[in-house]
Image 1 (cartoon, rainbow, N blue to C red):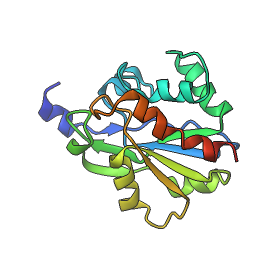
Image 2: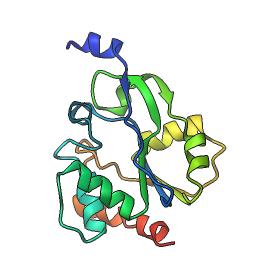
Image 3: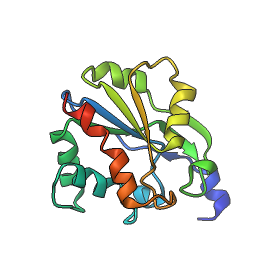
Length: 169
């Protein structure tokens, strides 16, 4: 597909991963190309998201989508994206055009145990504040797990430790 076709074809987020016990919500912006190709959250092999989640919970790393989903649910973590759809010719948030948000107000109402929101990068946080300024839950902007965000793995893991303070409540 050419860049023009990609811009003219909307991309869509996945369904959320959550259950009634979820007390932490992690929000990305919208899936990148590799995730869309694989139909799985954070599927780019150089994205640190899953490595961070497994390390935070002292679990052996897995590439299996079902195991990854189970780790989130077992640790009361919900995962979704701020945007429901957009037009974008790359995987970069800077290329997003004509975005439409997910219905996060309805999601939060349906998941009242959520007591904190963690944004996987500033892009997700910016879109959330644009569309949902009324949400008063505590929020944390985490360093993006994207390989495009050049922060050392150890630093990303250290900052992402904050999730444990909400998870354990």
